[in-house]
Amino acid sequence: PATPDASPLPKFPPGFLWGVSTSAHQIEGAAEGRAPSIWDVFGAEPGRIKDGSTADTACDHVARHREDVDLVHGLGVGAYRFSVSWPRVLRPGGLDFYDRLVDELCARGVRPVPTLFHWDLPVEVEEAGGWLSRDTAARFAAHAQTVAARLADRTGTWITLNEPAEHTLLGHALGAHAPGKKLLFDALPVAHHQLLAHGLAAQALRAAGATDIGIANSHGPTWPASAGPADAAAADLYDVVLNRLFSDPLLLGRYPDGFGELMPADDLAGDLKVISEGTLDWYGVNYYQPTKVGAPLAGGTDVEFSGLTLPAELPFSVREIEGHPVTDFGWPVVPDALTELLTSFRDRYGDRLPPVVITENGCAYEGLDDRARIAYLDGHLRALHRAMEAGADVRGYFVWSLLDNWEWAEGYTKRFGLIHVDYATGTRTPKASYAWLRDALREQKAPRS
Ligand code: GBH
Image (cartoon, rainbow, N blue to C red; front, side, top):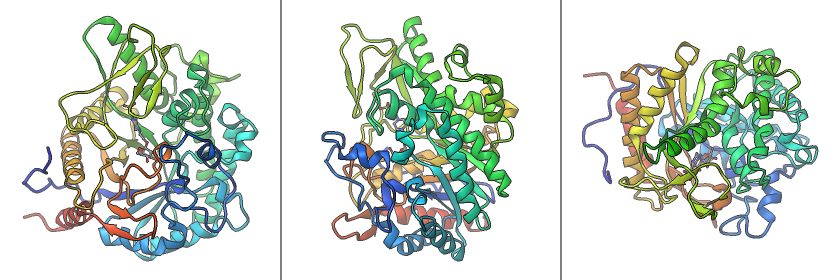
């Protein structure tokens, strides 16, 4: 729908955690210094970034973080999810910025929710093998320990990784994101090493006193293109690779059938224990859209889809979903698919599933009078509420994103913010959706009539 439902949003339970999300490389800029990351290298290669831009300035958030924290506070949310740039932490004094940020948040009563890795791997770690190397998991745990030693006195809630599935697929299988590797199924070690990194980092965080650990995984329902067996098998494989390859080891302590054998591990059972045992107090879901998948198309040509080149040799093909509005990214807007996702998660994982938090949900649209974003958020919050009424234990919801920002390979061409950013001047202007969410949250807190 182009306009939100006229009735007020249903009430979410008391204590439900409302938040907004960002990530370091997408907003911070290079002020105060950071070591080179794989995104600096990738972004400098001609043709990689749609508008040829870099994130050297982005939202200039390091310089402007007080103003941004005021905007978070003004929205009335209880939490702010940001990421800690590992390349920044490697510089002397690199944690000073996060120390100030956490103080600013705490001073305004906003819970800091740091993510320890949101795709910006330091070049020196990439050059030592990156996520193809098992050593990177241990290095990441050391990074977690360093950050926790500084922030854990004011930060109880932590997210280890953002979307290891997308970092594996886009960064290492298809080459559309940094580090630009096109390994197809040979990228599977990247998945295992990130999962192992999650487990080892959780141990380091617990040792530092963290009590509330999660991960932010991307998930969406996979819809087979037809009822035929070839399409069903292709959709199932896509669902395994994009969804269950990450949630099954974390929540069930095993890989989907046939995948454990493909992982680089001398002691797979031991690794799976590290990955799954006591590593999650809650499970973060980033949800954007469902995906329709069928068997590879005859003719054997690469397919351009939503900014990606999907090679013909993939054992599945992604199809257009028709009959729904689409965002500026071309992604279909299907709120019911969020209900479907959360319900199917509960069915699949049962008692093994800890409470869920929606750690990202949002959309790309131009303009300050962003009624389409309001309709998107309104529709998804209603869909979330329906899932909760049906028994899904969901404890929080974070909008992606606070600010318009550097959207990876799309550069500055996609605007996901509740707040518009003029990249020439740095000026922030709250959009209609910001006012809508602020008012909706006030309404949530008002006594029930
Ligand atoms: C998130 O990832 C990131 O965490 C965040 O940094 C980013 O800014 C934000 O979303 C917006 O992109 O195969 O074409 O059907 C993106 C999550 C999930 C989006 C899978 C694309 C499949 C697209 N992605 N989805 S397609």
